[in-house]
Image 1 (cartoon, helix red, strand yellow):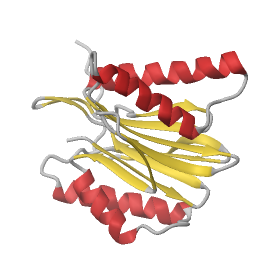
Image 2: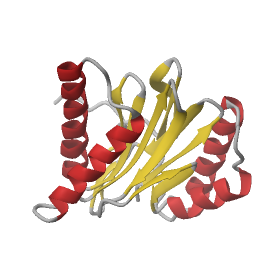
Image 3: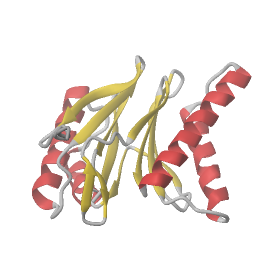
Length: 204
């Protein structure tokens, strides 16, 4: 029951994701960070099969770093999104990844942006987006409350409303969420919303 969503505000973008690692009826852990810091000013929030999600996002992260190392300048958010879409499209004809991505970034020239990239390599620039079962509720909340030029406080309040709606309406709702933000000061973790903490394993 994965939930990944994000939105663009006034000079920043924010993304949130559940932190549950599950398989079938088992919860393996509830503190899995599904939002990768791609580089200093980009975030990748991913949902999908655990192996594909980790392998593909790390592959994109290392290739973006390699480009910057070779050329001395970082990729723009749009360029990183198009590169990611291209890699998904190439893999789609060979060994497809079951990964859906929200890519958020901040560029000096164009400001904040958010890109929606699904597992069949569809790419759209959006103001708000979501993946997973939680998207039914988070998209509804964002349609109702989102407006352009939101402040950080307004955006975080909307994220909290989405999380509360998912927790109250989704039949098997993930308990914990992580929120990250990217703006002119860079990409960073903003907060965790936890209702369950992983218990320490008792030593035998």
